[in-house]
Amino acid sequence: MSKSRNILDIKGKQQFEREVLGGDLPVVVDFWAPWCQPCKMQAPVFAAAAADYLGRVRFAKVNTEAVPGLAAALRIASIPSLLVFDGGKVIDARIGLTGRGPLDTMLRRALDRHQGVGFWARLKRVFVKGEPPAAQPARQGS
Image (cartoon, rainbow, N blue to C red; front, side, top):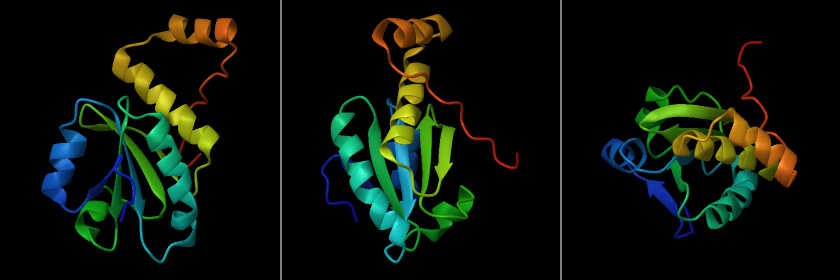
């Protein structure tokens, strides 16, 4: 259960479809369970990001024990897992405990994609503003 007003607590498939797949902003979803120790460690990092990205990215949590069908439909096999959705599609994902740096990278990439920011604008941001480049998404099975 989320204690933050900035984080949606997804209780079922219909709410997920409405709030995550039908949303007008990128949405990052944390799949977790109450017994999962790394999930408990992920929670404050997730909550801090939700506060910092308020109004630009939506944040949601899915308790895989309470909504197992949703987790199974999305092929969530390990928790914590973070999935980023935009336009109803998964655009990024991380499995396991994710620190603030990698989470910020995921969120910047999602915002760039959502806002249609191209390669040259991202490159300028790196060289002019000194922002580190976004890492490429990890490839599974490589």
